[in-house]
Image 1 (tube, rainbow, N blue to C red):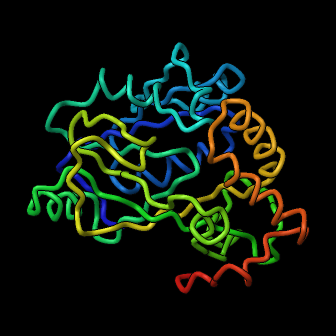
Image 2 (image 1 turned 180 degrees about the vertical axis):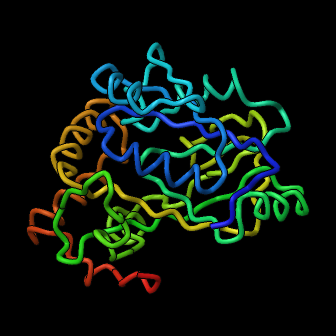
Length: 250
């Protein structure tokens, strides 16, 4: 990746039910050139985030991050309101979303600006262990080696929207979580998101999230139900059935 030196890039994220990816997340985005992180965190993980916090991280413990489970973005929206300028580009991602920047962030933004775009989208490529089971990782692990299989799982199995606006110019309002923004102008260039969701404990976390989404009355609870059904039928993520492929860069 090419580090972006000229732009003080900001990143906004929230942590609700698991913080184990935080070290990998910070390292990935620092390498990409992110200079400032704004993190809203739930109470169980406040100490973990504070321990990882350095001078480039601002931690919020007073914002509601629980609504992220049901597709809401109130915490990220409030942090953006406080810290993102009207004409400023920023990254808005979840903790398990690692955007790949093959030409550096500045080059991508230059392409977007040339098109007068205000949003650069990423496509979610879920990452899986080779045997399809949920496995853990260590602080020094190479995530791509542990999860070498990639697939457009959200589209193929969940039946959901597998795109997200990851680079956003100014204070565009969410229209559908971070999938769509009001008055957005989409850049023709799409990025790839390595989605490290299916780690140790993921199925239990998904069951809890499924109950919360069901209780909220959201119709897309069926997307989580499809994942649980798939895993229970196979005892693993049967990636060969939904277009999984070995990452050619490993």
